[in-house]
Image 1 (cartoon, helix red, strand yellow):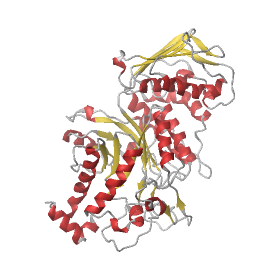
Image 2 (cartoon, rainbow, N blue to C red; image 1 turned 90 degrees about the horizontal axis):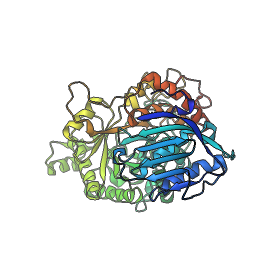
Image 3 (cartoon, rainbow, N blue to C red; image 1 turned 135 degrees about the vertical axis):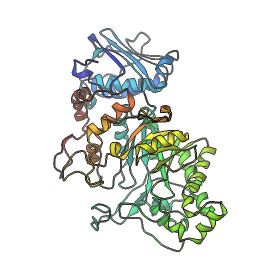
Image 4 (cartoon, rainbow, N blue to C red; image 1 turned 90 degrees about the vertical axis):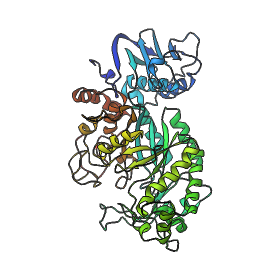
Length: 518
């Protein structure tokens, strides 16, 4: 596909794009014609265009700018759209509302870059002539943001949603709880945020070091904030996936509720270190009941069909040393305390399934999990295909290609998350979700992929965006459409960078850090 004009340098690449002669001018005379069911996309389009044009884009039955929901367009699937721009009109069509929302993002990219952030009405904007038919390959196109290690206000999460939506990424995975902080409000257990939402200081060196910043860190969300975020994201075609980690990564919860641990008489603080904490949940019935209550409130707040329950990096030392845990393993007919890991996840997963949700878990090995679990395979690609062969749905999350807390390039200013391991732009673009030679697992079990940004060493929105972009652009390219040539992608990214700059996404390194190459 030849993209001769900079404004047609779209990310991700549309499945079919043909330039057309002429341009369509959006000005004081422009009216929207909106068919039933297309109103959410029309509202979003007005929100984006009105500040830049100074025009309200009013409705009219004979409007030349048409947004149409047409259920007969079954070939476009749930998220595809068709877009035609000519001198005399614009037609955006889709079979489902999500497709129209994605089409609106394409229209945003077709605008002059400065229009993306302008709040000064220019009077008019020109869209280039084009014809596009666009359908995603993968239904799961996500990005994880860890707000447990370093809290970010909901105002920033809305901005992050907008950046995801611009690239047609449709899942914001919020990592809400961990050893270092609990950010999810739970009315039945307010101490989770009152105590678990604050730590005394943060480690500034890599895991195992003794360097700390000496500054308290804390924060948590209200139900109203999260409910508002869910609505805001849905209006942009993005689902918010909540994660409540069990039975490991729970030190913040244990600080708030010692009775949940294997030694209820022990008092723990919210962890200030990075790495894998040895403290895990106990396995008595009251612990399971506690987290069922937590998850009931999570499900009440987040309508996502999926709920993430963590599941990885769970040391078994405390269970092996606990008479109560050993007895539980015996009563459940398990071979030993180590098997309590899968047993615990199975009990929590069953609660979600009974409520009509789909549990998601991290899988660091090929360990057998309940088949109802959707697996996020992060340690080795072979584990993803092994899970698919067993019948799991899989979200690809290989740390060597999707962990954006890893360095973008060599340099002392890059995060020390995994010293020596670099995930550069080309590595992300080379992400391959097709079965390797000799692999017989069904390819349709791979739902898609997502990028992960763990925030042990990432404290500010500017740093989040420096590490996310342009690597999320490459991820979006791979999960939306068929494989694209690296040089073609780089050529389009050059044009796309003007949009990111207009939106204030930093390509220079955050203050105090040296520059690094893309």
